[in-house]
Image (cartoon, rainbow, N blue to C red; front, side, top):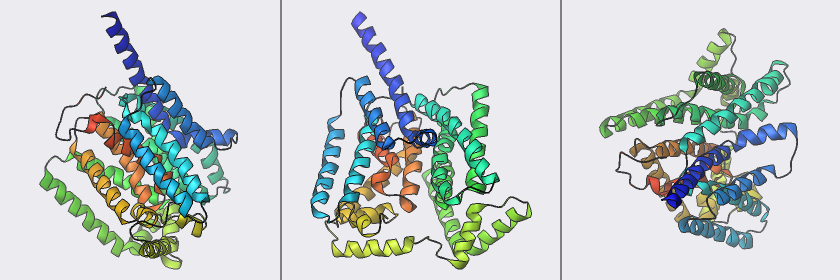
Length: 403
């Protein structure tokens, strides 16, 4: 009996610490920006993620799931082939380094975790990040010395704290003091103001729209109504696309009228009227399709596209996979994406499903427009949670044990 109690206490501590570690993992982009503001540390990103993995392995008694290891070995083998076949394998090696750091750190999600601790950790880090935004970024903006292009990645970083705040209301037994709730609310409002009026990142606003749209869809239990709402969203999207320049111009004029000029609206209007609204993405899409046509089944190899385009990637998840790995990999990623989307909408009353929801929002919108598969820690965390963690297996169950 005493040994059983000791084991239960040990497991409870592991679950507690796993939650904190994953919270730090998901907050890494905020933490790294804070640290590098104070002192430059070479390869700090990789070091930080690998440190989380090592601590996680120790906390969980050096146990690793076989499926988790097999997935890593399979993807590492693809990198090994690419290192041999790609002429200039600089980016192949870089992508492998980042993938390894992200995937290993996300491995903590194979274990039972305190989802509440994940969200609390993110919220605490987010408050510190907002202080950085206010005292460093906002100050530079007010003095007219802020490089607007520098704010692009900051918007995606802000989306981490915003997503955690709004999705925390879906958690069971999530408790926080009134004071901390007020502080978190002010932090999120600050980030929303930053995204809407200071940053020029349009992609992060797509992510924000996806967050609120999926929250609405998640709350609809009737399949017929959900399909209708999705059709409605699609119709609105088509209308906006067909009338984009008029809508952007009207919104921009409204902000000017009330002396609240928006950088992202200004940038969008400028590109619509004078430049390429896609910021060169259409050219990358065409080049990616051309590369795919030359090697449709096996792909050109991981990193090959970047080596031929000055470090640029296709800026689209599915074109990325088609180009580098071929049609077979595209089918696998497409099926996984649909399956993961189905799970986050289907599974209810589960904190793990809420966590998967947040990972989906942070990973997929950015991957569709602004990033590559190998540089997305949220995608690999989503993959481990969906495919390896056993607590999301029974998608027909409405009652789950999360802690």
